[in-house]
Image (cartoon, rainbow, N blue to C red; front, side, top):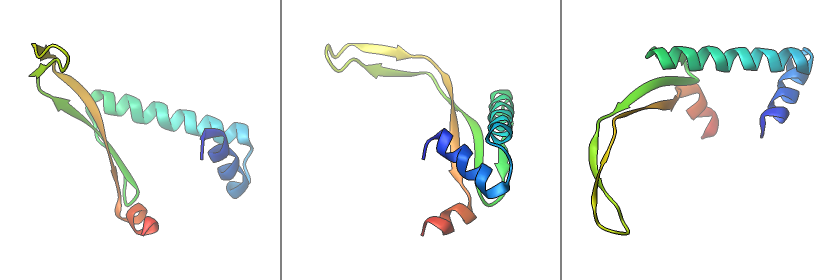
Length: 90
């Protein structure tokens, strides 16, 4: 399911317009990304959790030449499924 299909399905289930649902999704994703960027964990209990993780700097190896390279420290995002989502998939 892509975004437009998701918007259409939520609009049909909620009785709202697709424009309104699209605006709500935009606001949801903007809020989640802003909070995770600050380092805050965002959780919808039972469904999903988003949190920022840190990767330490490390030494890697170029597979073509075998030369060692330094890989810089970086941040990433961890998304965890909640119990209700896991139960729905079973």
